[in-house]
Length: 279
Image (cartoon, rainbow, N blue to C red; front, side, top):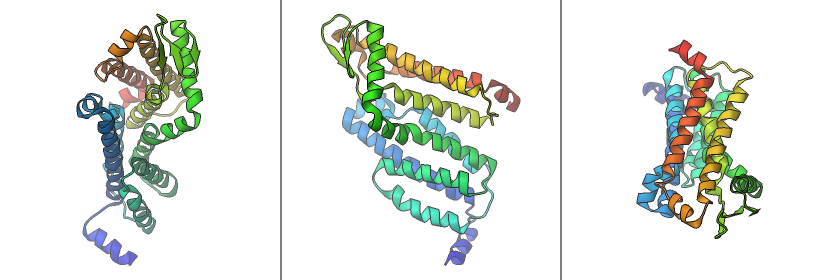
């Protein structure tokens, strides 16, 4: 059966890279579609579209770059283990559950990285795609486990900025007119995972040689997005009027753009030597 399947694949000139890329594309498309549908249901078409359906442009860029790297070297025959993995993952991807699609991406990336003799570009693509699953799946699971602690940290920083009391994830407005509740969608954790994804995407794109100081650049990127998020929430916490004005999809575009520019700039500065060398 395997020989007949392999013969059919060879007849179609289907390479290993194309098999992996096809699985990545199917899983990512299903995962993104599920996220977009939930966004439309929660916010409505207009607000969801303004907020890019709650999918960061960094995630989209990472998926594009990762899959492009997988397809960059279209060599190698498909092995029996590859077909077995594909047959296991396809039913998982077909489920109408976004999280399962990102789990499939994770499993495929780990298979490519640790159980195959993949090409350099396939490995780099797998690293980027594995990093893309963090904001789309794993950071959310991590948040579910440590939600109270994470929200309390955000609330403490906002309370310190405003000089007001906080109780759990609830912070008093600066004008004492009410309270502000910090919910998971406002947490800094999502921004931190995007900063790490941006770093991985850019560094793998330019074949950055890993160094000890990379940790400092990553910490700088993460700290900058946390600072922007805390300032954004603090501005909302000035009064109920500020909250109503700033807590809208349109108003969130500005801090989102600032976060994007910051983490891209910091990531590029961190890998600038490799980027200039490759150029």
